[in-house]
Amino acid sequence: MANFNRGGMGGAGMQNLMKQAQKMQEEMQETEKLLDEWEIVGTSGGEAVVVYMNAKKIIDGIEIDKSVIDPEDEEMLEDLVMAAILDGYKKADEVYREKMGKFNMGGMGGLF
Image 1: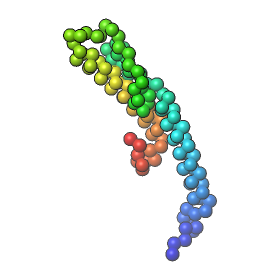
Image 2: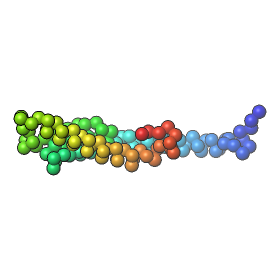
Image 3: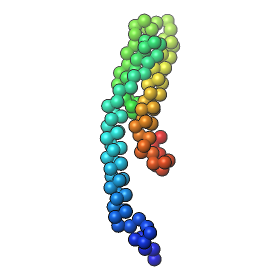
Image 4: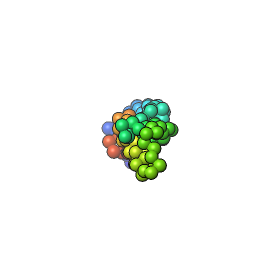
């Protein structure tokens, strides 16, 4: 029969580990809220198209300069919108990795 108190993680050691895990969970929840509120701005065409999103890639606004609206070339506008979204996604990924990377735990239960 195994004795967990001899040389193992018993008693106070396990309690300390549980407190650390709870603290990490609280920090992670706070960081998740921060990511919800973080404003990311993706742009393309010299800011002719601007996309607003949070660090979780939830888009909440798009601005398009009238100078790039050409009824004869809708494909260009589509490309500019996609480029602005991709620019925002890239920036959001950087913020997410920076803020959430510490919770990855060395590849265990990875978040990305």
